[in-house]
Length: 457
Image (cartoon, rainbow, N blue to C red; front, side, top):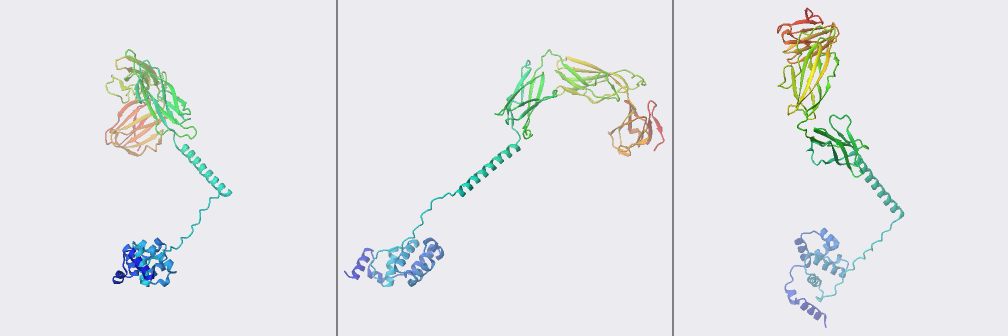
């Protein structure tokens, strides 16, 4: 069989006749390769990266400079791979390459250049230095984790919650005398429970699980408990203290109880500003009534009625009534009493009208000169105490409603820019105004003598 027969059979097997190839050659192979690459939208550099064929060889294929290629065997391999990459029929490309070189069209066995042998993966070798470095790295990481946990522990305030009672405000039976408070907190935290009327708070410590509980005493009426937690190691206090209010109802037939802490019975006071305060139970209001009992030993007879501090309306003549606070405490504005002996009667009244009464007897014996100046309109004031000019409150203009208090050993002298708007109270006795509005005057107060107008300016 001749070479031409081989070519004919190869052409028939691939469906192309020699005559047809000769009559319709079409574009050259370099042009086909170039056009196919441009249709693909890639350049030679990208084609080199994706086909692993060097740019110089791709350029030689597209220009038809086959002499620049490393031989026919490699050229066929390059053409086949490049045709597949460009989407062309690799066998048709090889046939055209042979035809343009003037070779027979019979197919030849394709020889693909061998792929480079890949280097086998190297086994992992752990040298002693690598093991030591790894152990040191793990140790450092664990140390910083521990350090971070400790810093977080010391920077966080203790937690605090109350589980019993489940609600912050509850009512219990009227016979209940104590109650067990319970909750959770940070393990080891100190729980403090403070209630009005008790000097020292209740204290307990949260257990290893964080649970805590303590029995507290209850009295009739409202019992308010302020609960806080402190971490003894860091000294940090819980951010949100808890409040529990437990109310024990009063028996309907139970009368109020009353304790007067101020004033103290039988005490002699050096001025007439007498505070009245104390505590009560089962009472809604407290009333104070004062009664003048006589002159203090060695003091001149009082000639003025004492003036009480501000209070609620509805008080009996000479008295003041106020409401009792939620915790059972009460406190009146200071009473302004003249020198002498006084009886101060305090009465607590329940909603049912039952009462409890205590009386405190005191003596007011002023020492020296005690002068209260009340400005009813704008006025300029200048003051001399025991003959010396008083600095901080002297030589200034005061607006209406301002009250000034001065204390001297033997005398107080005051010059006012408007005598009619300046009221005086000497040792608890209200003297009122001593002149006319708009008229500047100077007055000397030197008890037991009456006030005297002077010419000092």
